[in-house]
Every structure is written in C-alpha cells, then in structure tokens.
Amino acid sequence: MYSSLIGALEMGLLYAFMALGVYVTFRILDFPDLTVDGSFTTGGAIAAVMITHGYSPLLATVCALLGGMAAGMCTGLLHTKGKINGLLSGILMMIALYSINLRILVRPNVSLMGEVSLFSSINPLLVMPFVVLLVKILMDLFLRTDLGLALRATGDNSRMIRSFGVNTDTTTILGISLANGMVALSGALIAQYSTFADSSMGIGMIVIGLASVIIGEAIFGAGNVFRATLAVVLGSIVYRIVVALALRVPWLKASDLKLITAIIVIIALVFPSVQRFLKQKTMARRRTEELAELTRSSKKGGAADAKA
Image 1: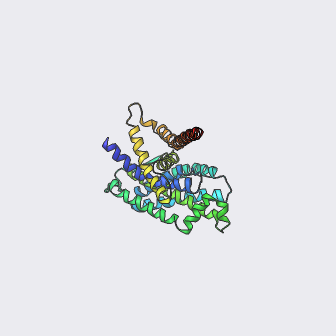
Image 2: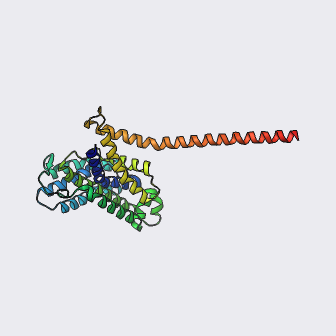
Image 3: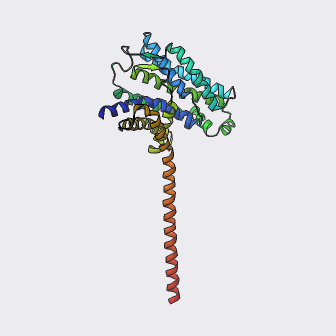
C-alpha cells in the first residue's frame, strides 16, 4: 500500500507538467486541443531515441520539449492561418503525429533498460517537487507579463483584445506551442521513469490532463492564476492517488484504468453542479424559514395591536 502511494505521488509529479499544459489550452485559451495525445508520445519518443543513441538525458529532455512545441505550433498554424476549426486542427495533428512518432521510434517501442536517464541515480520524489514548483512559479510569472496577460485575454475575449492591437493569432500559436511543449516534457520524463517509450503511450492523455485540471479546481479552487496552477499540480497528484487506490479494489483490473479515469472525470464534473444545487436549496430553505418567521412576527404584532 505504501509503495503504491509513493509510486502514485511520483507519477503525479511527472504528469503535473502535462496537466499544466492542458490547463493552458483548456482554461486559459479555451481551445479544445487534442494534439496532446500525440505530443505526449512525441516527447517520450524523442527522449528515448536520443538517449539510446548516446546523447545526454538532459539534452534529450530539452529536445523533447522543443519537439512538443513544434507540434503545438503546427496545430496553432492550422487553426489561425489555415482557418481550420480548433477541434479539427488538434485531431488532424494528433493523427499526423502518430505516423511521425513511429518514424522517430522506428519500431513500436524503445526500451531504456540499462541506459543512463535522468532518474538513474536520482530519486524522483526528492527532486521533482522542486522542479515542478519552479516551473509552476515561472508559468505564474509569465502569465503576469504583458504577453501573458494578452494570452489570457485571448481566451477570455479575443475580439476585445484585438481592438487593443494585439495579434490574437500570435498569442494563440504561442499558447498552444507552450502547452504542447509542457506535455512533451511530461512524456519525456515518463519515458525515462518507466524505462520505455511506446507509440501508444499518449492515448487518453487529454482525458487524464482534463481530469487533473477539473479535480484540482473542484477541490482546491481557482480564484487566481497562482491558486489555479497550484490546484492543477495538486489535482494531478490527487488523480494518480485515486487511481492507485481504485486499482486496489479486488474486482477492478489494470485494464479498467480508462474506465476509472472516465468515472473520475464524470464525478469531478458533476460534483460542482451538485454542490451548487445543494447550496441553492439550503439558501432557499433558509429564506423560506426567515419569511415564515417574519410572517409570524407580523401576525403577533397585529394581534397585540388589536387587543390594545
């Protein structure tokens, strides 16, 4: 039990970069980017191939980040310059990346067993919390710059920000590139942690990223950028812990992981609505009681005046 929770915590920290990337497109840009499923694999594939060819794991990880940014830039160009629907742009790029990833890997999977990786001599639990915190702080600082504010405004009201002379095409491409770079970085770290990269390792990543974002916001709230990014990171960790606990249920199997993910997302989506409904119902009951009390008081006052 203890080892599974530790493993879930480590995985949650590694997936936190992917969750932050999904947060940028899903919440900040309001862009339904399905490129995530492909760019996650791209990051893992680039890192695995470079490491097996003798390159430094750090250099391989940086190249994976750049590869993900390139994939995101292509999606942004399809949407902004090609005038293709955002959802369709992501789907097209995801399909294209499947073949590109196979080209990078050469074969369906690449093993990193026996290779030197970032986690060969470093415990992820001792290093990753500080790395994730550093990336989170850098993202917070970036989103408070003029360019970051323009990026946030593009997702809130693109027509309004265009009236101030901001090129929304540029901010959209930048945001999608940044998001997919973060996703690819997560893929590279996961490949090194699990000691293999697979052509199908990115399937369902968008759902996992959305689950992390939604769970984090539902539990920890998202009042401002600092709190929102912190909630996303914690949501990623909570999601992995919930999955680890769910897989320990006797009648659930490892093959039920996608089903568990879907159920978690459904609960996370429904929970705020239920919470809001119960709050409204409580307020309505309180108002009814106050009105009834006020009515009784007025009747008593009227009766006293009549007696007088």
